[in-house]
Image 1 (cartoon, helix red, strand yellow):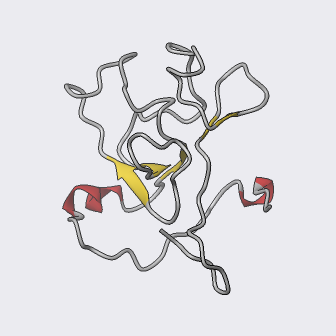
Image 2 (cartoon, helix red, strand yellow):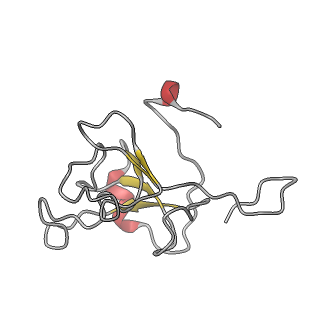
Length: 125
């Protein structure tokens, strides 16, 4: 996890999931815990390149400094049966270089990423 300069504790990011038809996002609860199974999320895991916050499996608010890029497999993620939606906080999609996604291997280093849309809506604590 990421420890900010001058701090001694790992910075943790709470689970945040936005749902269609709901003004405010849900924090710190999975779709199961909140009783919202089947409600469509704003940014679903539906295509290659969905970007989401990695976290410890049984600690919703353990995200820190790692993200993952989802690789869509229709056999593993049938329509309406996606087990990641509402359980991990997705926050965007890749918009370029998707042809390289399946070539990335564990241990590879991504040197940079750039927000191309929505930066004006970023809320800093």
